[in-house]
Image 1: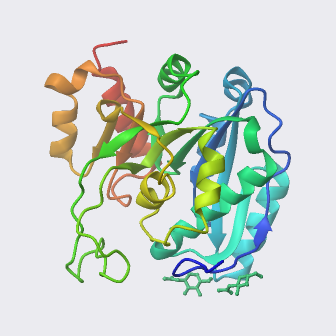
Image 2: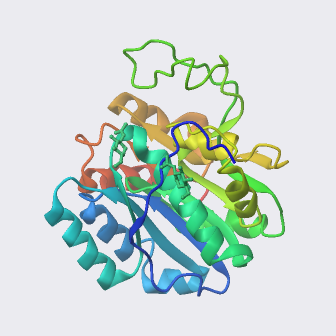
Length: 285
Ligand SMILES: *[C@@H]1O[C@H](CO)[C@@H](O)[C@H](O)[C@H]1NC(C)=O
Ligand SMILES: *[C@@H]1O[C@H](CO)[C@@H](O)[C@H](O)[C@H]1NC(C)=O
């Protein structure tokens, strides 16, 4: 079969062990980068502590690309040996290569765990999470098939300015509208969708916008049911936005996911401080 545009073949440098042993099997796929070891350790100690893993049947999986620095990849190998929760591909880590990480975990999980998977939560390694709140919601939808829970974007406009970070050429993406898709910082897919995502890997054109690629491109013809839980998200790019997120209507909803940018301004300690301030300002505890 002809391969989609920009297809590259990659191999796995590290793979998780054990995987697919949880019962129920709820996978948390975290897009991370070689250099972000501190973020992974923070997540291992908090969201993915042994206690929480057991309580909710969670199995974390960190998906990494390859560093140009051989010593850094050696450190990843040691980390993978210690924790068994890393999937690393031999693709250089750049912004436009993130979608290859997506291709990697979809094909890997489909092959290794297949239909055992109850749900997949995909998140980035700098996202703050209320894992307990999220579990309440997931429990509510546990029988729902073809489920996508996320902050939805509807009819997103395609950026045609070549200077923009989000620029898409007509060759990459011919139409002027992105349709319905999920913000990539965190989304949940029911496990039954994994098979369909995997089938579509070889049919759908590669697009470096990995959130669109998965939640629109690969879900083509999947009849997925999108539930917008955007009210439970907070994405902050400035202090001013933070202020408004702690006031008015925003306060009514428990926040499951928080994202604070730019990352230089929000090292872990700062993210923790802001996140607890947000949690403290929510009415519904
Ligand atoms: C990828 O691998 C397949 C199967 O081995 C091969 O047919 C194809 O040409 C390769 N594609 C690229 C871009 O290397
Ligand atoms: C993506 O990774 C490949 C393989 O490591 C590399 O050759 C290529 O330059 C990267 N692409 C971009 C856009 O960085």
